[in-house]
Image (cartoon, rainbow, N blue to C red; front, side):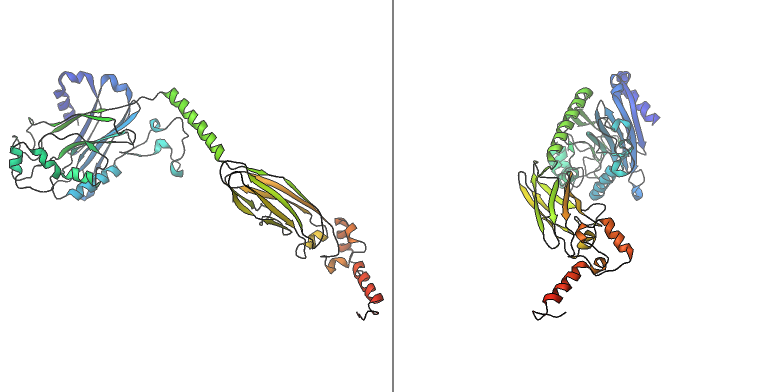
Length: 462
């Protein structure tokens, strides 16, 4: 690292005084350095480095990538220097290595990533905040990916030497594996590249500018970029060229000059826009909340007699701007939506805005439900809960005055009653049942007496 830094800075000449190194990362033969102008150092924040090997056994660093992420003003960007599998036939392996590096190159989150205008919610309920979340290469506005990507020409046309000698290398670009896999979205999908107007950069005889006849020439060394949606026009390719004068390697170095649009957020204006959006969302949310117009919150059935059904109607209307789903629901004290003596029709349904429905409520006391009502252990009183899906609950009280009679009352109770049951209170019933005294129920006595007096004359017998 230090030797490379000193060598690079020696080559800068007088420009070294205007630049400062903010990051560097090495992985065997891969090395990345990031310099920033001295007058811009203060606007560069959240600088982080990462490296991943994907060579031998998929882990060794003879192949892989080193990366640097940073935020310039309010624009996050990432730079990746990669070295992928060699050999012309290994195009699928290079594709796989690109996807592997894209997945494994990650950076730790930081407080700078957290949006001060939004809550620091847990990430997928894990207990980790936004600042703890790992960021991938593509969690940035811009990604610049460069290095010895090792993509070759798909086939040997047999006359490459003549084509290159005539300077017609651009006719070979249609055979470039990288352009083919990008077009087919097999790797580097969504990436862009400057116009290639230079000869293949591989493979040269070291110390010369002559191609090695034992290898097929190719554009192995590339510079590409990717932009997040919304930043598509944010990169301008100002220069893209190889340096033919450098002969110390079997590759010719490639350099690119890119212009990147960056932005600086006006915090106060952003806050004002954010609050305005919140108000609009609140208004929209309120408009989407279903509301109902319930005709009454109390339904009185009046006097109710055994075996006589009493009906009432409750009108429910949709007074909101969205479809309304309604339904009567059970309460914590009762598993059913209504007591046994009350029927509701319909119990649930849907109404479009402006529509209404007349819900029929029917009280009917029969032999199944009369026992606790006859001894005044229960009353015809209940509270129904009308629930709106994604909306509020409406509470509707129903009331009726049950007229106690011997109808529906068991003989076990009647034999303890000495007076008119309709005039008895709950305490009277409890006292009679505890007394242990039995008598012929008055209603039974009257019935038998009638049959005794008049039944014989009519041919009736007991």
